[in-house]
Length: 125
Image (cartoon, rainbow, N blue to C red; front, side):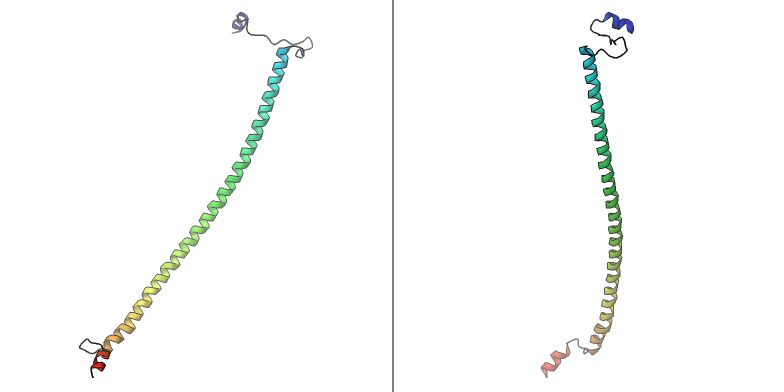
């Protein structure tokens, strides 16, 4: 691979000054430093975005957990209400049966055998 770079004239080698630091006056070095600064800036922005996303995710996770807890409470209340409604319906059926048994049977015993109401007989007299 190094042979390819030597043949390609478009590739500019990175040259350091004698003390090992990049040459400050060279436009290539300035461009390289600018690119490194932009990369560092982009990394900082990406880190901020990542932290912000984690914060939002944590808040949403907390809200979801609270909503799930609330749903569980509401489902428990719903089941309790259904059970009470079923018990109330059973009581209503029992009360209806008692009323029917007490009053309808008493009404049958007071009726004459002909099946016509007593009032109608009293009015004929």
